[in-house]
Length: 412
Image (cartoon, rainbow, N blue to C red; front, side, top):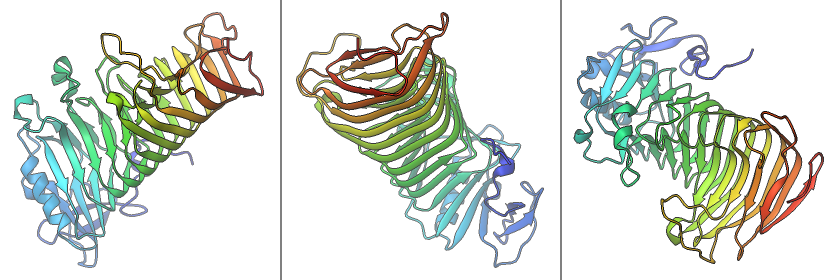
């Protein structure tokens, strides 16, 4: 049976055939296929559950943050496996909240069946960098088939890269799983995974308008051993961005577009040190994106991006299907030329096909002082979206390129 992303019928984490609900008096879970909103009793041997309604959440447009925090504190202070339940068919409104650990529980399952929406007044955000934060919580699952809505239309006209508001952030959360959730209309980034280890992000739907500013889908920073799988991402910025300190990253079964593609970087901004290694992006489809698969680094940085594989990828009307840019400059005036650069090495592009919206489909713009090394292309064939003529020639600067299989030419 094929499993589709964000289908709550696939979310059987509480029981192979049932959903669970909570009773406030006993705080235990009851087995019933149709009980996402009921209040039945269960034996005390069952895992404990905490329904946010039982802690005062009203889902009436007023702030429910206090009720969510009380439910979190009760769960975090309990032993064993615990559930926090956000009931379906209700919209809960939250101001900025921080769910902190470490917790006594061996596993916390945050079951979002309903919708969580951001508070509408930006002036009430004292710490403007974050909206929902999970901090130092190990063995955490966030799932349920519900929605997390950043209410971004309030923020986008005031977009500011100095103090961007992030929708959902996980910091130092090890053994983390986020699955079967819809994240939409983020203030800026939809989900930031920071300094975590052993992470799975599965069956996600991430959406914002294509013109919404800086709304990256999934942003990975300083994180090791992460799998992003079977997800659809449609945003106004990178569908997936992987930045410094990240290693052993695998993204597979991703549909991206609109957006800016799947990016490693940017790396080395403000003359900083940056390291990314062991990244595999496979079985991806990019539709109408400004970039396909991209590596971007600033001049003046140092460090390395190495051991990277892009394979089995379909491009559909992508503006820059394959690009390495070591002169990345995200500002209105030209960036000064500098000799130092993040080294880009051991990058494989394999089995990449589809259409480009422009004749120059492949660009390698590498540093004069620290050129790209070990760049390989196998069976790469891209055609013009209108003429259907082969455009898989590479425009190259300061790169050592090897090709094999079907490929129209070497660098031009």
